[in-house]
Length: 148
Figure 1 (cartoon, rainbow, N blue to C red):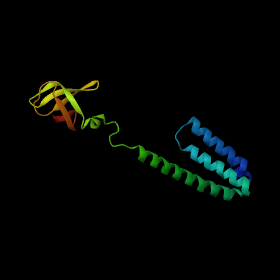
Figure 2: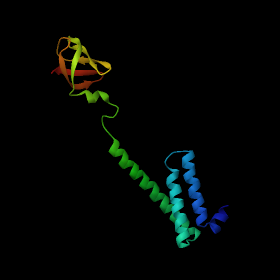
Figure 3: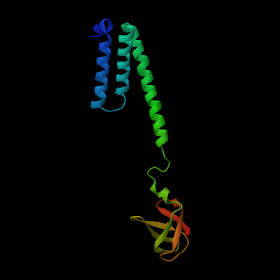
Figure 4: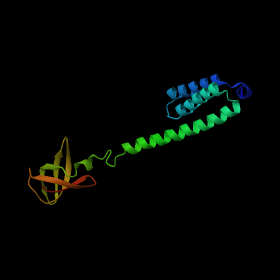
């Protein structure tokens, strides 16, 4: 087979290889084979247009595959950088600055507050039930509050 590929590899061989690699990406997703498949398809196009020999086509494929993988990593890195958020999956940080009503009085520095559908432990100055408090920071599983 390697002898055939070396002596008879034409545009259709590269195009079929590209289709197979793209198809493998559909069967075994990993966002990697698609780039190699696209490089093979592009190589098939180059062989078809310019009649490249198999050695030149193989070098072109290597360069295109490398460029495609590096380009994909760069593109993915830019997407991820745009999506990253320091507070992702940190709902507690979204509470900072929020004004809430005490569910139970703060006695000896500890009490409870209702936030949407959950109850949080609060730490702060002693205050009666129903007092309005402002969350100033989060310490572990406790909200540190001050009188609003």
